[in-house]
Every structure is written in structure tokens, then in C-alpha cells.
Length: 327
Image 1 (cartoon, rainbow, N blue to C red):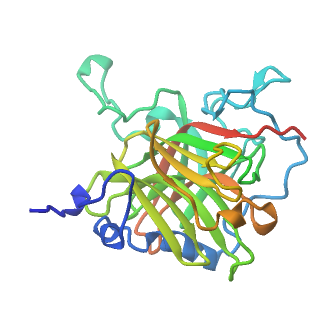
Image 2 (image 1 turned 60 degrees about the vertical axis):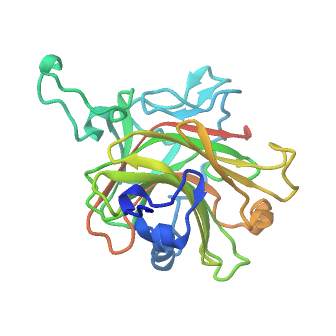
């Protein structure tokens, strides 16, 4: 007998495109458009970066070094200055655009399983719960439907320049929202497609609506103009559990097997490639003259339409690989 309990994800397989029926079982039907749609309608400029581009030069990452910021003072090593640009315990304004919804805090405060006694009390946090660093980034979402921390240096980056965006990500059980998520996100708009709104690719942790304490990892891309949602289930997860996520965007320059106008989305979970897709809008996306807002890289926490409470997401060891530019 086929057991289709939502908590078991039914027939959803790792690296498996979710059918509408499977998405309904895990409480995801229509959520991608709900995730994006209201914000695009209510805040048509969402995501809206703060202020004009900086006049500061674009900082070059050292060859072979992909660490962008671990919030402990390591990341964005400058070859010409011989130092890390990242700042311990803070978001360096040359690297990040953010508002009051984002803050760097002590890593222990991100976990609900804090020891209340001495080290010999027998307390042992479940595996995968605590990061291996001193500070992590918290993004809380309690007023808006979505909150972001944007990667700068550079703030805008074209598809042909994008190579990889990764981070350790945790979705907190403190989230009172019914369907919160914490994701890596790459976002632009397509003016030639009415009404000229968002296209994005996202990779993140989503709360399982069917069973307490459970979550799942999903990659998705959405074209709001076309009502297109492509969800790819990558595997189960748990709330308060750190998982390593990585989104790659490749072109023919990276993989000669791709067409001249192709881009390929690669979704990685804990270092393993789980799914790849070539978006149907590749020819538009790869041409910077045919996209508008951004594209931008961001870390995002969402609490969906009709939220019932806040959402808390945590991020550590952010990695960003792209074609180096100094200007």
C-alpha cells in the first residue's frame, strides 16, 4: 500500500520535480506565487535596494577564495590590501545592504536548545543544530512578508557573471508563521513580459505544513509574469537544523555542453548536486539588455501571505563566486 502521509512526503523523491498534488501534500501549492505575488502587487519595487549604487570600487575576491562573509571577520579577502573585508560581529556596509530586520548575533542565541547548566550537566544538543562559529546572521520577518540582506561588492551582477552563491542556513522553530522559509535568492525583472515583474531562482528551507518540527529543502524558479513555478524537492530537513545550501548558475563559458543562450541552475544540498534545470527564459536572462531590476543576490526570510506570526532565519559561512571585476 502506498503511504501518502504528508509527513513522509508521499512520492516526492530527492531531485524530483514536485507535481501539484505533491506540493499540496506538503502545504506548498501556490505558495511560490503567494510568496512573490503579494509583494510585487503591494510593493512593486520589491526587492528595493537602499539608495543608489556606491561610488566605491568593486572589490575583487582572491582567486580560488569563495568565502564572502562568515560574520567572524573572515571573507572577501583583498589581494591588493592583504586583508579580509568582512567584519567580526557586524555587517560590513561595503559587503551588505540591509535594514533593521537583519543583525549579526552570537551563534548560541540562534539555537532554542541552549544549555542551562554547566558543561558536565549531560546536555548535548542534537547533531547539526549549532554552527561552528562565534557569530551568525539573523533575519527576522515580523512586519513585511519578506525581509532581505543583500550582497554588495557588487550589488548588481549579471547572469553571465554569477557563478555560485552558498551558505549554511537554519530555519528556526521560533517562527510562528505557518509556512516560513529561509533561502538564497537571485532576482531580476523582465520588462518585455507584461506586467514586467519578477523572475527569481531560490534555494532554501521551507517549513513542512503537515508535521511539527519538520522542514524540507527545495529549489525553485518563478516567473511571475507567466505564472510559472518550478519546484524541485531536494530532501527532508528539520527546524533548528543547519544545512549547507549552494546555488550555481552556469553558462556555456562554464560548461561547453550548454547552448550559447542557455543558463543552467544547479541546486546543491550539503555539498551534493541534487537537481539541475535550464529555465525556459534563458535567452532573455542571459542578455543584460533584456532584464531590469538587478539582478541581485540576497538572503531572504519569508512568512508568506496571510501570516500568523513571525519568521526567523539564520545564515552563516556565506560564499559567493563570480567573475572578478575591479572598477
